[in-house]
Image (cartoon, rainbow, N blue to C red):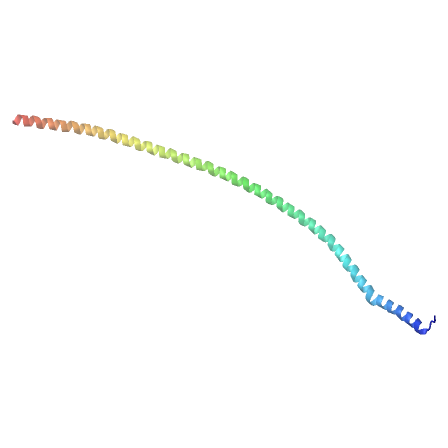
Amino acid sequence: MEFDATFIVSIVSFILFVLIMNKILYKPILDIIEKRKLYFEENKDLTQTNNNKTQAILEACEEKISSAKNVSRNITSSGLLDAKTKKDEIIKNAKDISFRKNKEKINKVLEEKEQLKEELNSKTDELSDLIVSKILKEGKDV
């Protein structure tokens, strides 16, 4: 095997090529890859922190919503109870008023009935007196 100058020049040029490529191409690409890797790792931690914060906020919101629903249910049920109580009171008052008015009207009708009876009796007495006087008058004329 012979080693001549071409072989040595080829080896030297290959070594220079590798060194130049390492300096110009490989090292910047490896630096970029390393920077991206660090960027993703940093953002992964930040993302995990933000996810944890978001989950905590979401749980707090759900708890507030649940609490608000319970409060609204309590308000609604107490409002319904108040409304039912007021309704029952209004109906009772209306029934009482109606009963009193009916009672007054019945009493008024009974009073009118008694007045009419008395008036009828007095008219009957007058009519009887008139009939008797006419009969007696006719009897005198005969």
